[in-house]
Length: 429
Image 1 (cartoon, rainbow, N blue to C red):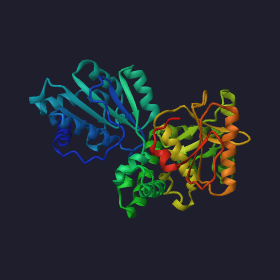
Image 2 (cartoon, one colour):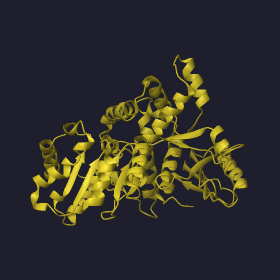
Image 3 (cartoon, one colour):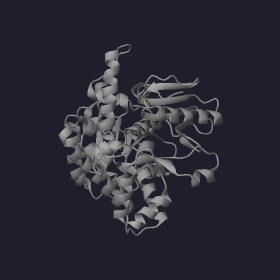
Image 4 (cartoon, one colour):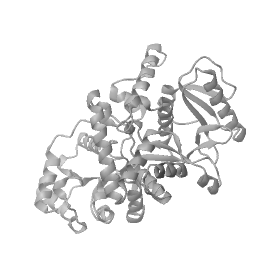
């Protein structure tokens, strides 16, 4: 990375029109006096949140030349060495001397690609009149460096694919209360959401192009965010694991069983390899392991975790969309509805199962999810699970969420809710 190349990259970023951005629920603070960090899977919308923030600053009258944007995946900047980072502000001051001495708004995209970035960002924060925004695609890397390098100087936001409410906004739809026609449109939009997923680029793309975009996207995540980043020695096993996790949303992950399956297919691996590779998927925001609701750490360890992908559409390059269970996709959508706001989530298993327990140490809500409860056996199973959960946690509100509801009356204490309504409501008891 040299100063003249930096000037070219900075000038291009400062003069080109900002791309249009669709509204997202998350709006970044402009003057928090903290380093604002965005973490999340690739293509979840982190860069466009930076663009939206830059657009807000422009509307407030901030000179575009005071907005400094660098994407550290730009090949013109590679390779990047820690000692060269001081060139960034020097190049900017030489390029725009007329705004020297004025506050700068600095946006560093995919900052995990820069060695010792946290040391440099901390020094900028402490010594310069700047407001800093950084993004990254690795939870462990960013968390470790934010904690050790920035030491209380940062606030972090997780960026997920679109929630259902955001999906509606991207589609130009809005629910009209007390309108049956609107309720029908919302139910239809939910089916569209469960088929398309929430990755912004996929939602906005022509339907014919979506399979190609998804395949290229999954390949990029696999090779760059997993194999390359972690130096994976057995990419064949990792790809099989990735396929398994994505193709079974909301399913229990049994390491011993999967180990036996892989060994029977002729794959050489150890259980430790599976645990390590699963950790890589979690750290790269590909999957979220949901633990069992047990206070005992031993019981948590021996019970399998339930895996939810960050977006069920990521499975489509591996398995055809119709083969994915719609109820499992809906269960993942409900899990992500809560996970966007909080991490204290679990599931409950035993004689029956509860799909989601909010705050397992003192449950605030028990939730079961089914695509349809019109069949008597499905209704009975889901209600029995919630009543079994209520025997353990009698004060916890209970909800059954489904796309097709039927006409049965639930027992006292159980709310039965249309899935589209549940996903549009704020996550609360």
